[in-house]
Image (cartoon, rainbow, N blue to C red):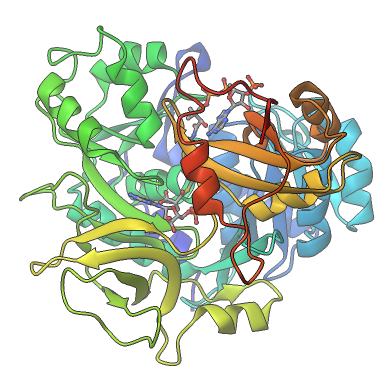
Length: 512
Ligand code: MCA
Ligand code: AMP
């Protein structure tokens, strides 16, 4: 046995390349230098007694040291558990209580407020700052730069990523060494990544897209990354000349198209733009091609499954579709009524099977069982159709989920918080078209004494992350319900469809 994932991702074959380019202060990091830092951190983790499957929860800014910590955790036998930096201490406490990590890592600026949260979960808090300084770096600097990797097999746990749910309770998706390796290898292959590539990396690194799709693909290929701390149109335009590829959520591409500086000449040297995490509108795809001459390659994935499908690198990249099943992955579309596989072009529930699919939800065996069919397919909750030639089109979601700027927001979680507020009898949270984020969060409240938009924002600001908070709030006399008493969110979505267009219904106005 050996350490399945890191042996493959970090194997020294010809990776004399730079892994990170253009870091602050114009620092570049070579692969061999990076590997040594991974080893130092792994030695430190071993010294503090990390045991196989122990979790390391991390809520830090985007730095190459966090990537080193991810691989050190895996190499030392643990499971990496990244958390969105926008989560409030209240939200973090849920994840820590649920996962009981050995360590909780955050930056110094947040350590004081999070100390008690970590302590309550039985975790030690250590710091890691954006510039790489902090307690982890200090402890690692005293360690050896070689490390004998802890034996882990293909089926061993490598990471836990929390994904919210329709019940409002987040579930930890357990990803194995094989899940991550197989997907990274397939993607590097189908997207033709090589050590000559430089990826413009502007995604956050606490989700599948930025952490696994972007970073692992580069590691497989021995490619380089321009590691931008967050997405900004100006910084992309500044650095794209040095890149060959870019990955992003649709908001990245619509924002870039809003800038006249983003033109054909600027990106004529690029070989690939990839989009995912949310639907890319056909009109964005077409506009991008008209402006730049590049067809964005759209792919489809989930936290639980990594990537499932991709449009072809060579061949027809069809706007509005997410392409074919990736090699080693099987996609089928079944009837929501009886589970039978549908014919091509019939809309049904999308199910997936393959080495990319996770091994279950952390400590939730019943939930895991519910989401798999008897023959081992994962039920994605997405609705779609397969064309005769195998292109998948996602037409909607069977699950009550909002995707805003690539972040998933489960209405139930927000409704539970709103329903507790004084003056709110009940609430419904919906997603409606938003010009920048694709979908924007809207809350509809019932209650004669319902709080105003400002009051709501103040009341919930330390409960839920800013990006999940409703951007508009309306008060109604009652929610529309069907004969079974279920709230008819489709009617609410129709009613408030245009509320993010200028000159439409005023927020917090009472609709009768
Ligand atoms: C920021 N805000 C948002 C979002 N992001 N509101 C709704 N949706 C968002 N996505 C809010 C902030 O709270 C703030 O509110 C205001 O917008 C500006 O914040 P700022 O930090 O300046 O925002 P930004 O830098 O412009 O960020 C927008 C962004 C970012 C660049 C689109 O959200 C982003 O990087 N998204 C990528 C998400 C991602 O990586 N998803 C992959 C998940 P206020 O001003 O009121 O305080 S993995 C996945 O989905 C699967 C597996 C897959 O297939 O990839
Ligand atoms: P998450 O598990 O939070 O990363 O979100 C996964 C969900 O994002 C999927 O179930 C889809 O609903 C959605 N998604 C990801 N990629 C795409 C895409 N290219 N087009 C449409 N929806 C997507």
